[in-house]
Amino acid sequence: MSRASVRAAWLSLPHPIRWVGVAAAGAALVLVGLALLVLPGPGIPLLILGLVVLSTEFVWAQRTLHHVRHHSTAALSTITSRFTRRERRT
Image 1 (cartoon, rainbow, N blue to C red):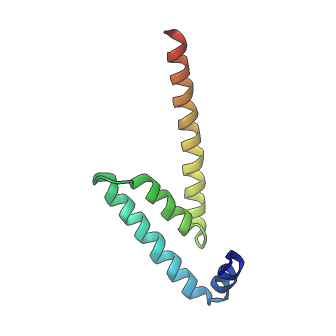
Image 2: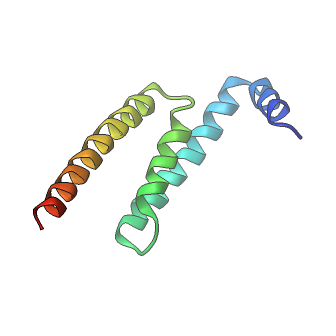
C-alpha cells in the first residue's frame, strides 16, 4: 500500500472519526511522554511526537509545536555557542 493510498484512505474517513483518532493517539503519546519524564525512558521525544500527531487536527497543538521548535533551536544555539567559547579558552 503506497503512501498516497494510505493518505487517501485516511482523508476519506469522516472528520469526527479522524478527530477522535488523532486526539486519542496524540493524548496517549503525550501522557506516556509525561510519565517517562520521571521514569526511565525517552520522555521528551514522545511528548514532541504527541504534539506532532495532535497538530494535524488542532491549531493549539500547532502553536505549541511552533513554540517548542523556536525555543529548542534557541537553546541549542546558546549551548553550542557556550561550548565552543569554552573550548577556545583552553
